[in-house]
Image (tube, rainbow, N blue to C red; front, side):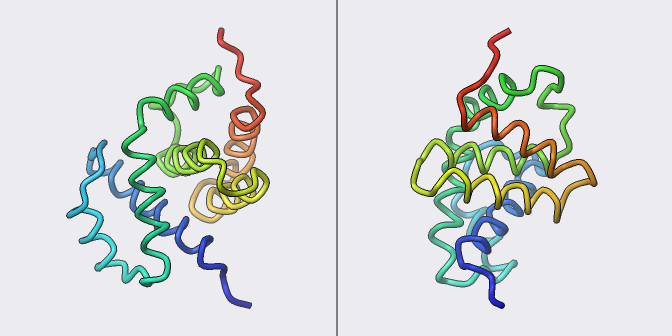
Length: 140
């Protein structure tokens, strides 16, 4: 069974966001993305989506981080594991686009969190993204 190209593009975008986080690069750089895509050998049919969601997440980082922080009353963004934070940023950006069904975005984000995160990452990411997707964010 082959992996859907969008799933693979999301996985590459997560890896790029993770790398940016480790390098403390909190803005989009086309040259940085090009170097990443070449090094990771991102397939040409996935590069457009990968670039779009990685760029969008980084260019709208402050708004996305504010949404994630609102949804997470008990966890500061800075204390979240890098993988979880990167998955949340990616999925929150995609939720804002509305181009994919919410269920697809949530399911793929949870799978990425399970694959790359800790034992609890899937549940943690699912809980926060569900709040964000439903707009059930407690402002307190």
